[in-house]
Image (tube, rainbow, N blue to C red; front, side, top):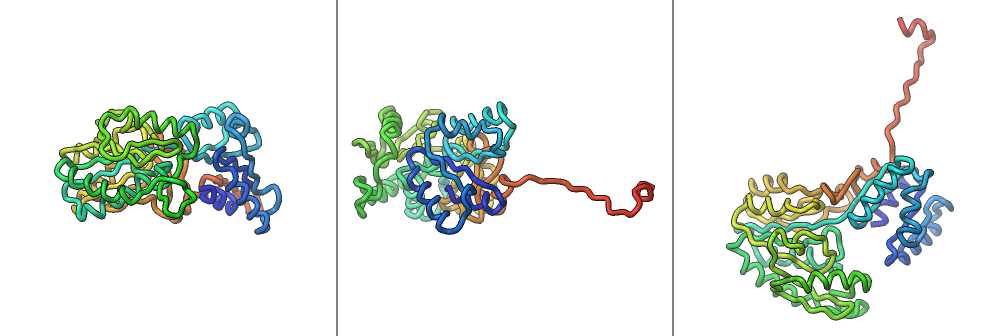
Length: 325
């Protein structure tokens, strides 16, 4: 994701100050080493590790920084709008949280394949992914069949040492985040699959929840999937859009008309039909509502956030008075 920002910024002629997350600073520093080896001039790509108050906020308030492109939590992202307003009105592009729905209708084909997409989308990288499937909105007529297939595929997600090649689910990123995710698991009233915790591991967990339950509204950012049954397409669309977020969404149906209608109705920056994904490097990535603000990463549109439109008007006439006439 650093490359999503660094590549377009450098290609647009900008110098970059990169502040990585505290938990992932080593990869950012290694990237800076590789950039130096590749010949990027000194001072063009600068990596400054540190905590938010010590590095992130000063970047947001710095009078000589012209724009900030941020990926992270909604709570932190919104602070950069305040920092910009209180400093030099710098441009701000935000890619923030998500509570991404996967809608499965009663006419979805090949439920086993659908279950594979859901398990991958919900639990890859331990669910610590802004575009992860975190809500399964499923038609009541196929709910039980689909859940049994999801459970079967979850058996192939062994939890343990992330350095073990057989492991598919490693540790959560920090002790504090483990405690946060565990807090949600402990509040789950109806755990359908999983639910075991052993610090720093949380097993992939599927819970039943109403659409207004915190497990179906809050961004947990962990391996927890909330299941919400619905009775119709219109109800599914209403539930899918009933969160403050709008980053990604998935829809499974064999009805082409319903697929196109649903893709338009879902308020998300990326919608996939009969598959899970977030596009590729050529497709714009970003969100609506509290998931995104100001621009997109990836695609040719990613360059827009690092450039400004400028008008230059030149009078080339020989005689200024004659030109006025």
